[in-house]
Figure 1 (cartoon, rainbow, N blue to C red):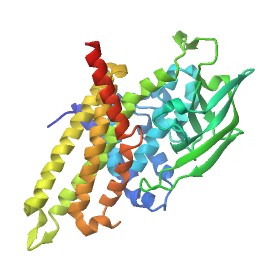
Figure 2 (tube, rainbow, N blue to C red; figure 1 turned 120 degrees about the vertical axis):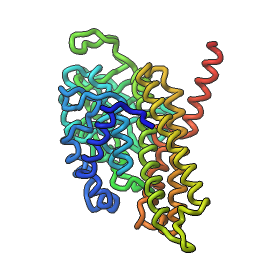
Figure 3 (tube, rainbow, N blue to C red; figure 1 turned 60 degrees about the horizontal axis):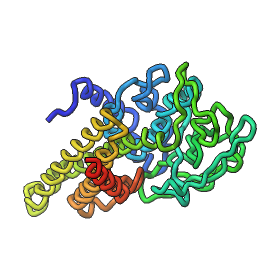
Figure 4 (spheres, one colour; figure 1 turned 90 degrees about the horizontal axis):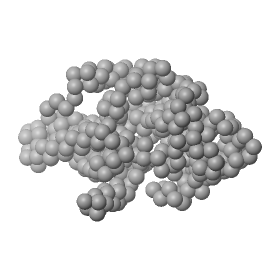
Length: 389
């Protein structure tokens, strides 16, 4: 059944062809550490896909959220590590055009082109889902802002050129070349091999006025953006701006990885022979495939529904987007697990792709808000809706 417009289907087809040329040949080398992941992404970035939602004036494609979601699904089906690296670099800077004004081009354009690597930094040692425990803080000194704190589990954090850093009292664009920025550690992970996950410290990093996204400690409440007076938003508005789309794209990442696992298992079931029959002829296998296909279809519908909710009113999309992320992370993991079961012993070896899919997708029930946090967000909105009538 078709859920996409002809233009969106054409966009998907062209994207798949680009991935076959630019990324697919290098997935195993990325996994084995034989090639730097950003060497692959930089080639792919020349096609504009890192800036799918950004205006063409910044080097983007000027498309909508649906096309961005398609990119997340298709790239994740090839390599989740590549997609997470891409989205962490470009997506986090999506709100900047409304805050930095004309200065945003200095950062956005090289990120979209893949010439520079970006990263957005929320998580801290004591602040995961509970951002109220965030300790990173800035103080104003003359015409600069002095930033102190640390961030960990940050995608691209250890290699980024530009970092969007959230503090208790503001958000700031930091360049890693500045004095006081320190990479403490790059984590080794269960999955997502090739992806750079960092722990960084900010020791009296001096941020110029032009790089302040917002600062709640200042008296000025308005900022000029391209000639308009707009209120300088605080952290709550910034998070609200990003949460719905973030959960939608993570849902799409789950869909992409699960789809790849499903397709691999379906093909394998028609090739593997046991007891003189293809294993697809056994109900124990074919019924698994039927269940996996049903879950996959539901995952797609949940993702599309989240996109529509965000496009309709992103400030009210939290519950629907959380449902999509929770459902897709849970069912996507189950699909990958069943795919490995169908491959049996071969699936547990690195000679098959399904063991990578299972290791990689496991993070998506944690990153961007754990499954438990998604359940909390859903029930909170349910009871609020009941109370509001």
